[in-house]
Structures are given as structure tokens and as C-alpha cells.
Length: 337
Image 1 (cartoon, rainbow, N blue to C red):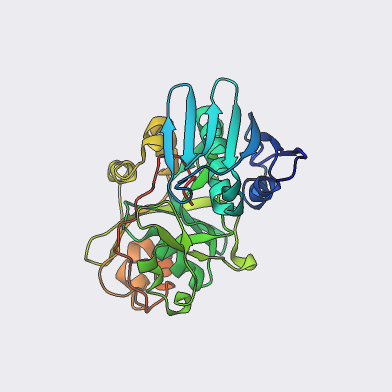
Image 2 (spheres, rainbow, N blue to C red):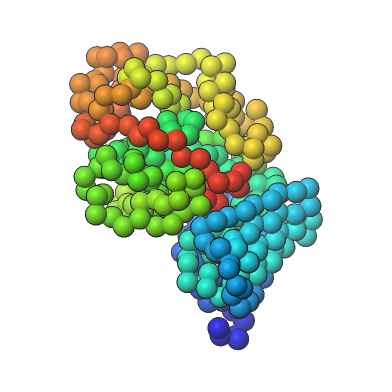
């Protein structure tokens, strides 16, 4: 490995991120991920030091990830590679095995885990486990329990020509009212069962992933459909019920449905007041049904929700919903992409 230390500074979402690394591969992984996030007025700072060690015998390596979040520090292990974040000092040390330097996804996970945890714990950033799609400047947050079809619907929107901000995690400045988000639109990751419903993805090679199913299908949205930041005009809460329907919900039901699938990090760091702000806009429940999404789903079927129904009618008409649960590996916002 090169002995020269690389020093870089970035401003993802406005956080001052300082990096010292023995591994040029880690710098490349950060520049392909964290460094691409735009300025959003988020404050705070984080220093990351990266060193490389020789491989150990029987190192399980990627994609087995073992996170442990405590009061004073976060530790994420991938075999003998370890990322440790010290909350009090906003400093992180990443000790990475030489073989792991050849796995950009693993390096990104280590760096993004400590970045997200530091910013969320520090009160600068909110991480929300939801997708966000955009059509004609209208942003729609998609949220639901595992297996509700969030990634499938996001890809259906992409295939129908809509923009994608994220299929998994979205991020907001915690110091401003809820509604504006940044996402990771450069790549989506779908379960193999979900991707199998789209013939055009049949030949796409899978990549290892720490989620329960072990491998995912990567999708790279066209540049013209990549939306880095978007404002949510409405929220759609996905329900894996067998009947296809779209209906508006009141604030009480919206809050219950929002919090039901919340991950531990969301329950710990998202305030009920902030979520109420987010839901203080048109909010709908979309029961996914078991039939393919059909063009017959028109404004006539839900006259009180004209624009939302029009959105649904634009989904890929021959695509049915995913039904295989996909669990996140950890309560680290955005880490397991």
C-alpha cells in the first residue's frame, strides 16, 4: 500500500469533513459518496483518520457488518476492519484491512456510518428511512415497513420517467422546518426478487450487500433523472395490503403509520414535532395490492386526490409489487446501501 498520507477536506451538506488516509481507495470512496452531497446549511465538523493493516487469517470480510452503538462511541466492524467514532470529540478512526480496500461499497459504508452517526447524534442532521421521487418538481416521500415495496415503487417511478432522490434514506437539516431533503440518487439497490419483476434488469449482475438476503441488484439512474435535493409536497405511506387503493389520512393515522416502521435511530433522534411538520402536508396511504400497477388507476378512482392519483397512474403498468421483506442490517441511517 502507498505510504503517503492523503489529506482532504469536504463539505457534505455543510458539515466540515476532514480526512487523513493511508488508503487512496478510501478517498475515492468518499469522493464517490459523501463528497457528492450538496451544501444544505448543516453545521458541525468531523475528522476521519484512515489506516491500513495487513489481512488477518480467516477474516470474514465484506459483507458481514457488525455495528455497536453506545453512549460514547459507535463501532462498525467488517471482519478485522473497524470504524470507531468518538462522539465527544467528533473524531473517527478507521482501521481497514488491505483486502477490503478493493471493495468500494465496504469503504463507503464505514465512512458514511461514522459521518451519519456523528451528524445525527450532534443534532445537525435528520436521517429518515424513506424514498423520495420527483415528478415535474413535485417531491413525494415514500415510506413503509419492510417488504411494502418502497424500492420497487421507486424504480417503477424511475422507469416511468420520474426523478429519483433516493430509494432508501433521505437527509434533512435538523435546524430548519421539515420538508427539504438530500438523497443519494446516483445508485439504487434492489432485492433480487424485486428486480426480477423488471425484465430490463434481468442481466444486471448482483453485488454483495450486508442486508439479510446477501446480494442486491444495483441500478444507476440516468443523469437527467438524478435529483440530489428535493422538497416534499406530499407523503405516501405504503401498506402491503392485498387491495389496491389510495386514500388520504388524517394527522393521527399518518403519525401512527409513520412511526410504526421506524428504526431505532429514528425513534431516538427524530422528534414527534419535526415528524408532525413533515406530515403537515397532503398525506396518503397507498395499499399496494397484489395485481400489477395499472393505467386504469386514474383520477376518476379517487376524485379527492386528483394529483396523487395521476402520479400513481404513471407507474409502470405491467409491474407488480415486491413482496419479499428486506431488513436493514443496522440502525445506522443510510449506512447499509
